[in-house]
Image (cartoon, one colour):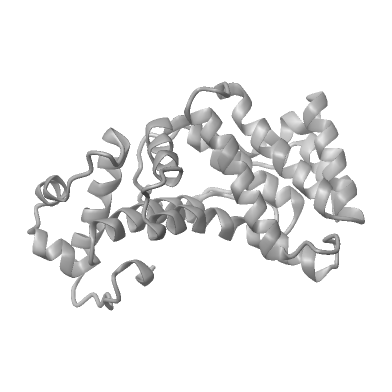
Length: 268
C-alpha cells in the first residue's frame, strides 16, 4: 500500500509508530462513516488521533493518501478475516465473495454511501478512485485469470477487461442502492445477477453453463440459491475495526445440502 504515501518509504522503527499510523487510519474511517468526505478535515483527524499535522503529512504525504489508505485497509482487513469455502477462481467462489461483501455493505450503509459518493464525484482524486476499485478488482481477478487460462473467454475478451467490466457494473448497482433506487432486500441478488449476466455474455463452455444455471436458480428463487445466500452472508457487523484474533479458530459448520449439491453440479 506504499503507493499512497507520496513516494515515502514507510519504515516502522517501533511498535508505537506502527500503532500511531493504525490509529490515524482508524479515526479516518470513523470520520468517513460519520460524515462522508465533504467535510473531512485534517485538523479534526489530527485532534482525534492526538498527533500534529506535520506528523500526518510526514507519514502519508497528503489528505488524499490518508483517505485512500483508510478505505483500502478496511476493505483488505474485511477480506482477510472472511471465512470462505470455495476457491476464489471458481464461479461458486466469486458468488460467495459477492454475497459476503454486499450483505456486509447493507449493514454499514453510511460508510458505503460515503465511499460511493467519492468514487462517483468528478472532483475525486485519481488515487482515491484507484484505491476504491483496487480491492474489488483484486477479488474479481482470480476467476478472470482462470477463465483466460482455460480459454473460456470469448474472442476479444481479456481477463483485465472482464475485471474492469465486472467492477464498473457492480459499482453502478451499488450506487443505485446508495441513492435509494434499489431496495435493501434486492441489493445482493442484483449484484449477483449482473455478475452472472456478464459471465454468460463473455464466456463459453462449462463455465458458461454453470453461470446460466446459477442465473436460473437466482431468478426462480430456488432452494439452491437460498442455501448459497444463507451460507455466504455475514453476521452482524458491529464495528469498522477488525476483531481481535482468537486463540483457537472454530471449525466452520458443514455446508448445507442444497449448496453442496449445487456446487457439485456446477463445478467447471
